Amino acid sequence: MSRTRPGRDDSPDRLYTLTGGRSSSGSDAFDLVTLVVAECDPVPGMQSEHTAILRMCQYPTAVVEIAADLGLPVSIVRILLADLLGTGRISARHPRSAYRLPDPDILEQVLVGLRNL
Amino acid sequence: MDSATSDRRETRRTLSSTADNGLKIVIVGGFGVGKTTMVRSVSEIRPLNTEETMTKAGEGVDDTDAVAGKNATTVAFDFGRITLDAHNVLYLFGAPGQERFWFLWDRLFSGTLGAVVLVDTRRLADSWYAIDRLEHHGTPFVVACNDFGGPSHTAEEVRAALDLSPEVPLVFCDARSRASSKDVLISLVSHLQTATLSHTPEPTP
Figure 1 (cartoon, chains in turn purple, red):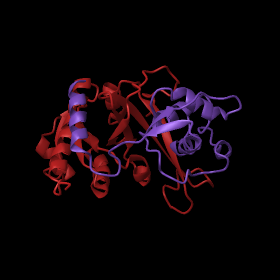
Figure 2 (cartoon, each protein chain N blue to C red; figure 1 turned 180 degrees about the vertical axis):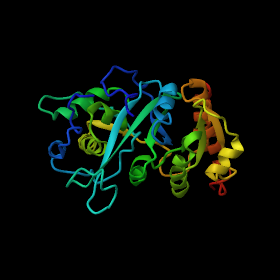
Figure 3 (cartoon, helix red, strand yellow; figure 1 turned 30 degrees about the vertical axis):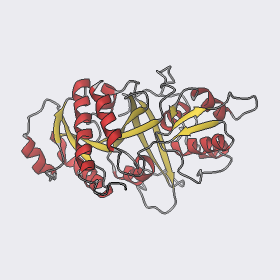
């Protein structure tokens, strides 16, 4: 817990450096549970956070898991992800049920999944 | 409060490459009511912790907690994960019910399937605000009374104290028990099914 981590050191300046001064991704494209998949390997010279994201997303990984692993606020992670998406380095699998009533089929699948736990 | 979570980077089970649909359920409750305990008892990963920061001048939100001069509101939350099948992955979020949290609700938890309000029957008043906000946001929920071994209350007593609408399910649980926590989630999803059925008036042509 005592380890100093980016985003937890009361230093917003550092967060701005990570995002090139932006505090908003300008879109809410990434839900907390959007699953992110890397579409390429990290390349030398890439921003270290981008490298870390590509490494951890070799398998689908939710935005919120990326934020927890990087120790960064979700809003900052969204900006980093928007950069990677814009350059085609990741793909995003968005939740199907966001912003509307849950699909009855999905609810049935959730119920079956829970009962099988 | 967050001693039950791990912020260590650890090797954890990866999702299947076919996973493509993330789902959310939020567990809301006061301090020490057992949110993280419930997340942990059903999660396939050790609960993780993350935060969201809202920096906005002039919101007048929770001034005492804002970092001086930065107008920052930070909400920390725990989460766990349940792989339901090859495509669906359910994320469970344990979130504090305090006032500032609700300013971030739309940003964090829009599209959530529903919520569990976890209550300690010795401190029912702690839940009033959360129930009020969920109703305000139109988020379907169930109320789960975590068993702390104190004097037992009847469902009727709890319902009356919470002024709960008859259609909102009330269940008793032990958040430490995987089976019991699973039953709470099942009661929520069953409730959602009922609510969805009664809200599907127009079949698509």
